[in-house]
Length: 347
Image (tube, rainbow, N blue to C red; front, side):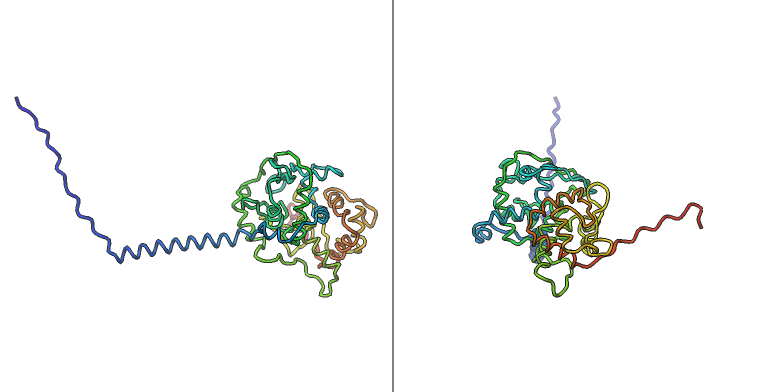
């Protein structure tokens, strides 16, 4: 009987590997090290360019006991209740900052957060430094950036003492349990990572924020105080200044009026131009911010009613300071109206 023998495959030895020359290996390692250093440098550059310097707890504590009474005053000056309380809230209800209002804008719908001291749905777990960094740096405790619908670009002009006092006052308000949903924004504005770039363009966090309006050399103390309120906590420019397509303010037209971000219509020019506040005196402006009445007897309406509800709580001197500042800034003429389209059949 014949048996078929299974032949074992012949194993061929692989050719010996060529050793990498030492000089080439050294060059490769140096290249990898260089790439690593470049990546590290890029990461450091990203950090310093996009992540603002934050206040630490020790820096806040070094300022001593906060003045809660002044914090209540800054709260009125900054208009916090207008957005964070329930819509049309009155009196004590304006201190319940459970959020939930929806702001419909060209970028999408922003949902106003709960900033009450509730531990689960508000900011009850935040430290004073966390609140100060949110207000003046636009940065959450986890380092993520806030959308500038929160007017931290203006609030960054707050004196540190005022920001600390405001944060301490917020801690004393009623806790409201209300979980607010996420914003509903259109692409690409829904990509929060893009806010780092937005901040690089429009938010100066390397030094003290620059003053905006050019004022007379001999500006009085009242004008300087008005500048602080209007450009800072009062955040008047957030509505009265037009914006570029990405949402940054067009400071060349500071307070010269703008399309309403919510709904239709236009927010008025409040510079001293003849077609704006030119005919008003500083006292007229102060009286309007106290009473809601214009010099010709008309009454305030719309969103400006909320502003008057806040600023009427300021001292008479501060309202007059606002008026003095608004009369001292450059008058800006209205933008030219677009040309009418040619008539049908015209040459």
